[in-house]
Length: 86
Image (cartoon, rainbow, N blue to C red; front, side, top):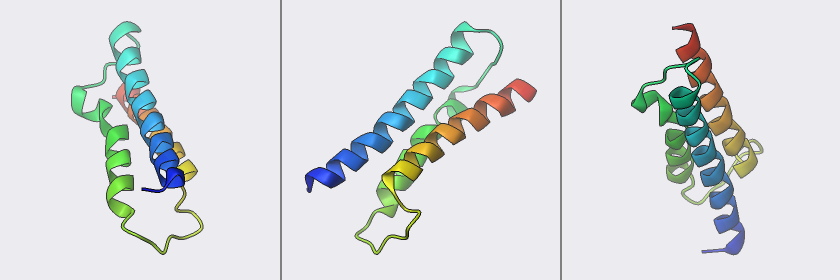
């Protein structure tokens, strides 16, 4: 495995993991939002999609590790907003 690929994988994994932990902590300790277990894990699903979509290229201009990390954070934010509204 190339070191650049490993660094990209670690970036997306860290973003998805941190977002998942943030959603779980906000749900558990604040009382403002109540998120069920399965929706709280959706940022990890973004990471799984990232892993399984990276089968060797060619990749487009938008298919970067940074964009996948941002997508994981956005999905976590959407889960929080939807859970707060519902």
